[in-house]
Image 1 (cartoon, rainbow, N blue to C red):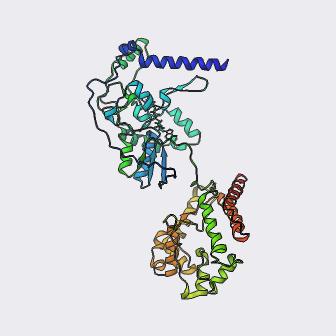
Image 2 (image 1 turned 180 degrees about the horizontal axis):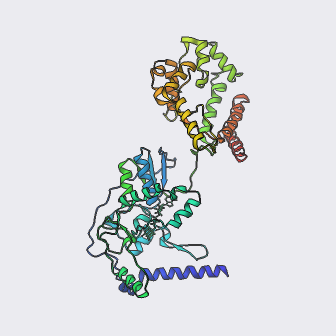
Image 3 (image 1 turned 90 degrees about the horizontal axis):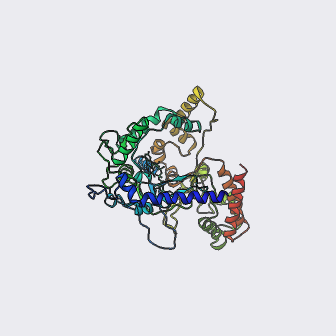
Length: 471
Ligand SMILES: Cc1cc2nc3c(=O)[nH]c(=O)nc-3n(C[C@H](O)[C@H](O)[C@H](O)COP(=O)(O)OP(=O)(O)OC[C@H]3O[C@@H](n4cnc5c(N)ncnc54)[C@H](O)[C@@H]3O)c2cc1C
């Protein structure tokens, strides 16, 4: 029975939509025409979209941030992040149509500018939604009304854990966005459809007010907003935030439907079962068993001893051993970054970590102020330089890293060069699971001589996943 009701609602919705699009009488009564009066082609921003050549290999793009969706949310995020100096890539499954192609006819617009042909119906047929799916998202097809979020909505969002909506910072953000998109009641002219609505409201005794629209005070009453703005006067993302993001260096891809997001770089989800990990294990295996660069018995301690007694020419290790190696080898010791990876032509970027302060999350008020002051004092340039003098370890402070005490010391300068090519290690407990799983796998390959690298990485992944699940 429920199924029949849903089917009947869906059919009724589709018929109503077809009627709205094709019924000539409705168009006549509402004064709707497919082409706005006095339409002239206008050029908008010339977007450049990254193109990917056809091929069977995965295409790799390096960026700091990927933004999925070029609507008002995605556009502003892209602008802010790109202007703050980040590498940004915005992708959208929809395509860009310049103002000279707009507004479209209803039939074309439904297919090319909206998700699901313009009719998204919930499973039970009870809710129908319209959402834009084109370059600029809903901002390209919306009706340009710019209302502030009502207080009760802001309160609800704040209560749901988003305190920004309760404070005045959000009002400042709103003011900045309204300025960018030219929200104003200046130049408002009501078209035929609006006038019919206004008259109806007056007759019913309903209160009517004017809402600002994002047309920067220009008179704009064609009534075609939902099929794209041909005059480029509606200040949606494709006219405002996305061109600003482009100016700040953001890259764009259209027709890019994101189907799966793998949070490989979130620092939380282990991604160990990869071809790269298999190659890394094979490299280690070959050092020992094929090239025989290291003796069969070598473990960390033996390798370190061979190095400090002059029997091994080189060792890969962290800066915690620098002082010890320098004491034992004196002028015979040199330090440098790992060599370029032949397969990729890129420098290795191993995790680099430091020593950290940990503060209970509940610390607040004066106690927090004192803790922060102490951290700032102990990591200031003067104290960091003193730490280098006493411990001969690299400082975390960038000014101290550039100080002659580091740059004039060949060992520290070599270590600093390696550190700067590294990737900061995420500071979270999941890393423990990753290291434990990797330790077991490396022992399996180097100790037991297991050369089934695919099986080892699969076991490594499973061990890390199981460990994360218990945290
Ligand atoms: C016809 C219409 C009229 C409207 N009128 C008004 C109005 O007058 N005033 C007002 O304030 N609001 C209006 N709205 C609502 C407003 O446009 C939306 O609230 C706003 O666009 C939402 O912005 P957003 O960035 O969150 O998402 P959207 O604008 O919906 O953008 C999301 C984008 O993400 C893309 N996308 C989604 N999934 C994927 C994927 N898997 N891979 C790649 N890309 C993907 C879509 O193609 C789309 O372009 C209207 C909406 C419509 C449809």
